[in-house]
Amino acid sequence: MTTFTAPDGTTLAFHVSGEGEPLICLPGGPMCASAYLGDLGGLSKHRKLVILDLRGTGDSALPADPATYRCDRQVEDVEALRRHLGLEQLDLLAHSASGDLALLYAARYPERIRSLVLLTPRARALGVDFPVQGRKEAVALRAGEPWFEDTRQAREAVWGGTATEADWDAMAAFGYGRWDEAARAHVESSTGQYNDEAALLFASDGAFDPQETRAALTALAAPVLIVAGDVDTGPRPETAREIAELLPKAEVAVQARTAHYPWLDDAEAFNRTVGDFLNRR
Image 1 (tube, rainbow, N blue to C red):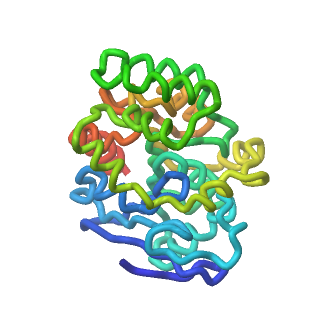
Image 2: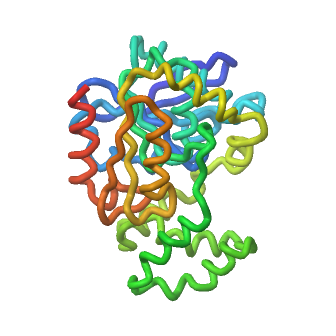
């Protein structure tokens, strides 16, 4: 673990594994400690992974002002990390909710992005969200799974807007292409790793201005890879393609038989897809 100081004085931590050119990695959640990323299915064999613990998570300190948990206010944390590492440009990877953070960073500092990997990303920063109908269609794809019927009550509660924490826990299986022991262990390892206060503030009012961000990203010259899982509830492959259409040099890779954590579902395919993209840079 190594630390640096954000512009507001908050001490932030990052974790390094592997060798080679740095790949800066932002965890999702929102506001989950970075440990769940592991070494991204062995991607550390191709690149030096520099994995940031967002403020208030993992080994990073709590900020003095909780308002700084808002996504757009964390952009300068990423820029401070770039300066700390002495990099002219970044190869940047962001998972899930931090897709928004990476997009806002790219909009503010397009010249600092060498390449961008958006891994099963959110894109509220662009005005793109996950339609409920798409989520239902993805859930229906798993109807043949032996555990599917056990989630009936949870599914009805989620679609009805009455879901409890237990219902959301029961829906965890849909985040994985295979609901096996490895997936269950991954869920278990993430318990207690979320900063709930920060998660509530991450996308709070004022965080996103999609029209402004879309306009700013027309200046992004860097190539972008968007990775989607074919059975993920969000983003669905069609949503990933919608995001790609809003970026000048974006491509979409849909990974078969995977959901929200494709590096766990099929590490070999994930490494081939992301590794080949990065090597082209």
